[in-house]
Length: 167
Image 1: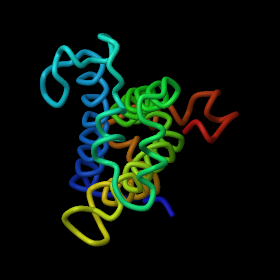
Image 2: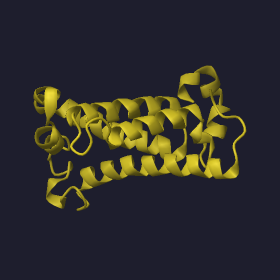
Image 3: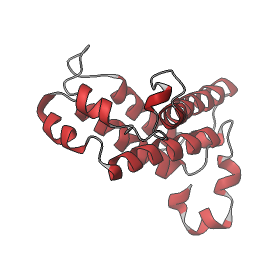
Image 4: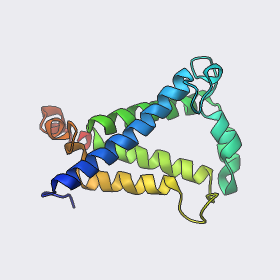
């Protein structure tokens, strides 16, 4: 159920939401990779050999799945998947291309993060991870990559026409 006739304000809202969430993810990648001093100190960057997943998975993971997430903390394959996810989902959302895969992967990333902190600290049912999942679903359903992005052009390429999952 995609929107076919949206107003300029709706288009701006979809574009801004998509770009904002994309930038949030891309910034997370950049800060963890280079230790830009926001949530990751310079001496704790991934480039300096510090795991980008250990702090969250060891320190923040609580609830019924905590043991699983604690065991995943700091494993190289988890670090690589997490960092590639932040980078590729972030770039895809910013540019509005590959939205089907990006929003699906984003939903998975945020669902895993939600499970790691379940139950949420400040609300018994909903936290920002659930809101981001809902935003991903709504962005995909409304073809948000086409608003203020390259999605319209991307969807017309031969590659995407042959493989619609890449839209």
